[in-house]
Length: 247
Ligand SMILES: Cc1cc2nc3c(=O)[nH]c(=O)nc-3n(C[C@H](O)[C@H](O)[C@H](O)COP(=O)(O)OP(=O)(O)OC[C@H]3O[C@@H](n4cnc5c(N)ncnc54)[C@H](O)[C@@H]3O)c2cc1C
Ligand code: FES
Image 1 (cartoon, rainbow, N blue to C red):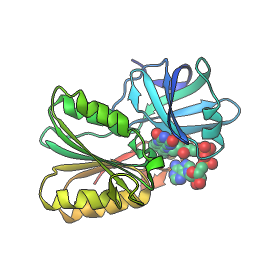
Image 2 (cartoon, rainbow, N blue to C red):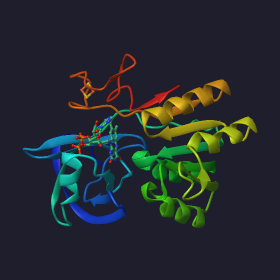
Image 3 (cartoon, protein in one colour):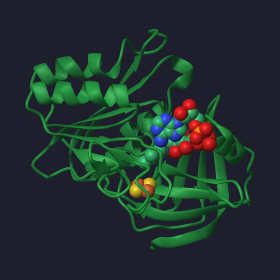
């Protein structure tokens, strides 16, 4: 298990297509990391961008093609190289006193949550995973969560889906699914990753119910080591103090 201070070459050993604009890359690297931490992926002479670890052993990244860097990564094939620095930042840290956890993912924010679910199920937690997207085609990792639910040895996993257009699961947003569970007192802590609007809504829902929550915030990152200030958010540098903040 390692920590790469300088970019280290990692060969792509497998690629899976998750949806029309998202692929999962497995790399021949192993890192000492926790769910919610991220790496900087570099393509020499092009750019370097942050990605959550889907897993650290082997390093696995889910990459949605949204711009120049991610489109270029999508052209890579098995056997080619991606350069990695990291892991960086603070991940999720669920205390043992919380038994019933809501794991909430919006869009590619689902990336760090499967590993978090596996980790928490291993200690016998009861997980409600709520995966949301605009429409069915944008959903990610539903099958991976469903597979995890089928192969459980310890703990309990309930999977809920929300799409804004109602094409799969509940019609609406992840907060619409979570709110009644919070009202019923069925949740001890909220763990989420996704777009800022979703996180802000979850933060106020959790705060109004007096529930602890840990949210993974996205920001533009350059150095990833607390020097450049690119990732400043509410007085904190997210590459060091986050990306997961405890609220
Ligand atoms: C801690 C962290 C973890 C991340 N994990 C993942 C992941 O697991 N999978 C994944 O696909 N992406 C993830 N991202 C986002 C990823 O880094 C960006 O999508 C990437 O920078 C896009 O690069 P690009 O050159 O392809 O597109 P860009 O041209 O850089 O961006 C394309 C579009 O996305 C917007 N955008 C890009 N980055 C950000 C950002 N940080 N905050 C808000 N808007 C942004 C831009 O405004 C633009 O509209 C993560 C980001 C952070 C900070
Ligand atoms: S990316 Fe430079 S301070 Fe966070």
